[in-house]
Length: 112
Image 1 (cartoon, rainbow, N blue to C red):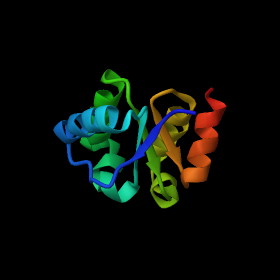
Image 2: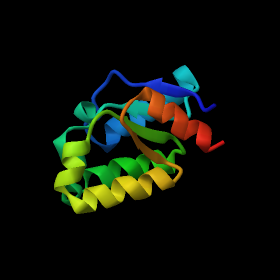
Image 3: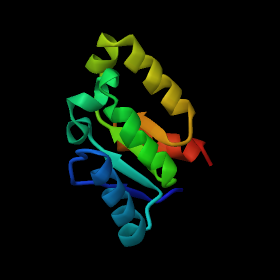
């Protein structure tokens, strides 16, 4: 099972992402970092802002998994592009969306 670090820090921008990735890797030997939707902020879920793409790119570049754990059902229901992105991300290797930690653990176990 991959090592997961649950962040208690909001993720503001790409430079925050890099710092959190470094901290999670060296201090916690993590392979994935978990954030709540609230820690990511509204702009992350507004795909036209570019924020999600920029942050996700940092995680991919540094080979760290990004997990969003929490209820985003209203956001997904309101945006087809977001719904498509969440669905495709959950099929990939670098970004996961899960309703809770148990669901995340199941997704991570299925990937091994």
